Length: 179
Image 1 (cartoon, helix red, strand yellow):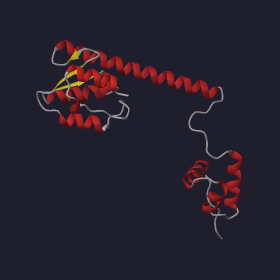
Image 2 (cartoon, helix red, strand yellow; image 1 turned 180 degrees about the horizontal axis):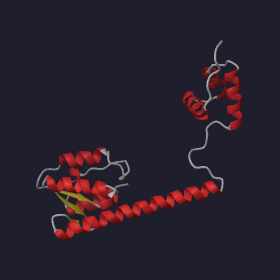
Image 3 (tube, rainbow, N blue to C red; image 1 turned 135 degrees about the horizontal axis):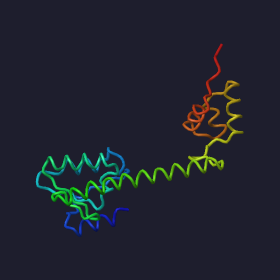
Image 4 (spheres, one colour; image 1 turned 120 degrees about the vertical axis):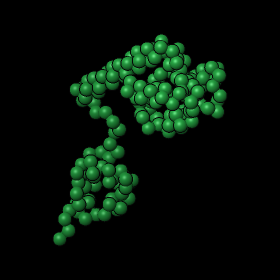
């Protein structure tokens, strides 16, 4: 939910009609809300974000955005970090917080990868569980090898066609050659 951020921005004086949000991760560069926001801004405006990592999570991306804003005559403020790039102090803080945000993200990724590796060593497999168990898959491939159509297999085993096709592709099954 963005309620906390929205309330903080509106309390700062941001018009609610000029708020932009995205449902995608802040780590992504191709966010439609961010693009619309950046396109809307003109020289003399100030881009205000609730927190620095809401704009982007990598230092190069943040630097690119803020450098572009500066070239266009647009100021940048971050409420949580109390940063304003129109001042030398704000520019220094921006560089420091950007580096710290990138470091924090790298540490988080490192911890996640270590946790996944530990789980794998304990025999846990990540990801979504298979929709077709091994025994049923064996019966399905036997039926297909025996000449049954994929449509009939889907009806017989009550498996959606997309699930069947994805599973067959994953195991590398190919249709028997017709003579």
